[in-house]
Image (cartoon, rainbow, N blue to C red):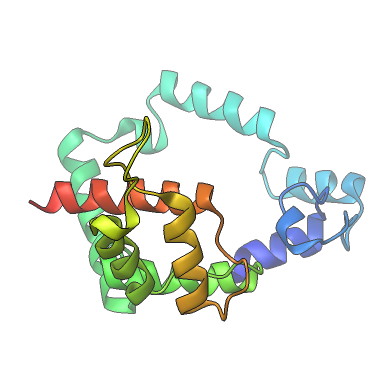
Length: 181
């Protein structure tokens, strides 16, 4: 994270990647020409295009990571995984991933679903009270009714969730439920 921050501070960015934070484009602390000179001095090619060309060249010449056998690659990958685990980062379990997602959603101004809200959506969708009783959709979940109940119960009657959002959430919850069976 720190390396990425320093990268953007030095080189700048066009604002495209940070639209969710409403950050304007930024030129960077070091002008592009000077960065190119520094990169050449240190034997590093500047820019994605050169990186891709050098990567292809190294692959063809069997240099760098391309020179390693499958066993060596696996060994290096395992070593990296052990280091990440020891330092406390790496592959996240489902609980950690959910917590991080909720945190990031909150930062971006979204209102994340709570576990209780997820469970309630799934439970109510299976109750007859929240299914269509007549018409073409008989037996299917009445999303408008379910959305109203969720907004009343969890969001002080504010229209935080729409029927379309509940429909998508319900689809994902049912898919997850079926997967765990």
